[in-house]
Length: 487
Image 1 (cartoon, rainbow, N blue to C red):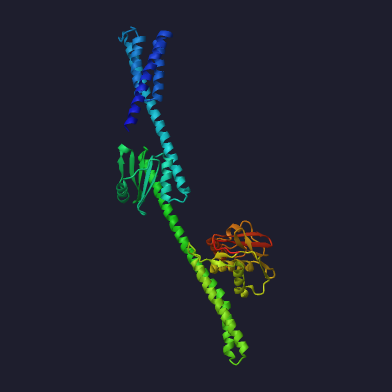
Image 2 (tube, rainbow, N blue to C red):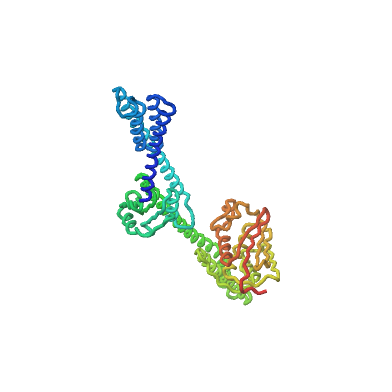
């Protein structure tokens, strides 16, 4: 602050010297070189004073006016060479010149100040507008209040900004000259709605209100701004914090809705899937109860059917529980060295009721490596991919399954001959609950199968991709060969 004041003093002194030097130069040219009369010289002095007033301000112009009046009297009004004025009319002219120059200087200085004030107000308005727009566009991995403080420091060219969010009880700092301390003053401002000013450090503390309630507080360092701009900043910060809070609540509501939708979908899917094995079990037990005297071979066959369908029912329940567990953010895998081809055969065997005579081919290349994967989760993922191929292709067309080695991986490809998936939809089919508008009302489904398969494969460090054109769609499931690889 001291250095800034000294610089201003030196600048004013230099401007004053330049103004007086200008009066001296005009006097020399008018008196010694051009030898012009007093009237013309007066106009030259007056013009110079107006230029000084518009360029530097009233103080320099007033000094130049007084010196110019004295020079006009001494060099141009008789008796020349003295400060005596012989003709009373010259007194009137002399004072008229002085008054005119001072008034003109003052008006010019006021006009200049008003212009500068208008430019500053325009700049403040532009910065507030830029800040308001940035609030709508803020996004990033860091917390919203932190990004808000950064934008505020950047737009208003502040040395440091500290934002205290009372609801989160967190301090967010930004700016090239971050500082510690003032936590207690910030908390008091956020609780009581008070304001502080530290002129020695060029700091301002203000409360951020939402309506009449203080919700946060701000420290701004390194900028001089009127109260209206400061209040505008505080209002925009309040709007930004409330917007971020509303977005967080919306995300929580959306997550709750998705969880509820998942729960409802699982219940519907379980009810639908359970009907087939329950019907078979009931038919077998009813046949046994209705005819106890039937041959042993027939009884054995019926009991075998009931047992197999009970095992199928147990598997469905396990899968349903697994689907619910996959709603969590993290998936734990229990890996073991396994044969992907054998796992695929087991999945197909468990889906014989779903396949129901559909043409299905399976090709397992002998060089496919034994790899590490979670058999239970991987079977669930494979089942979802195969079920998707069966569901979205005509019953008379084949589904082709191929297991082959990849680059340090085992690869499963499932190809169907349905109508295909458009390029626009291919990036979306692995999203939870997404179903193509063209099949939503024609083919039953939940929009979860491919999403589940994709998450399971990613949990293994692999990938699930799709390539499709009309008449052919291939899902490619890649599982990396881990440390337990055997060939």
